[in-house]
Amino acid sequence: MSYELKDYLNAINHKKEDLMVSEDEFWEKRYPAYIVNKALSAFAECVLYVNEMNRLHHLDKRLQFQFFLNSIGPKKRFSKWLRSSKIKNLEYVKEYYGYSNEKAKQALDILDDEQIEHIKSIINRGGRHGGVRMDS
Image (tube, rainbow, N blue to C red; front, side):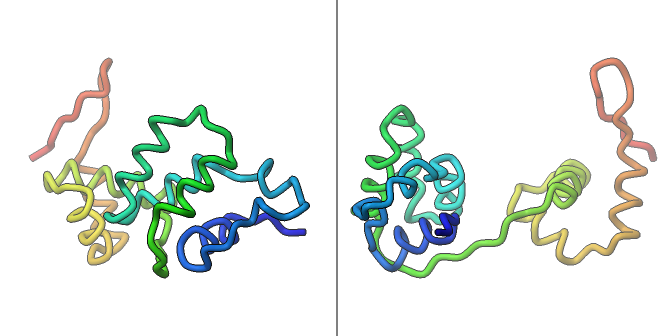
């Protein structure tokens, strides 16, 4: 049997199917609470529910799943995950242009590799405390 993240997210988001009611006890044991919280936090209508589960992280996995299943309205939700290299580039763009996360993500879609390398070369992270020095 496959216990994948997409199965849990599909059950919460649009199927509204309680996976943990079945005879298979591994649905509960393999529930990735942190990853589900992270995936759902990308959507504005879910942020308050995710925050509540972060506050009550000590609850059983079954209770956390039941909370999301019964609280979040049915809707198809999908968001892409940023790769670690893109996250580093995001930090460079944010720092260089003074952008927020959202604007920096949009800028990353526009900038090519050569421009990103130029930004990296300008921002120097040297020194004892990792201070930033802008070369002119």
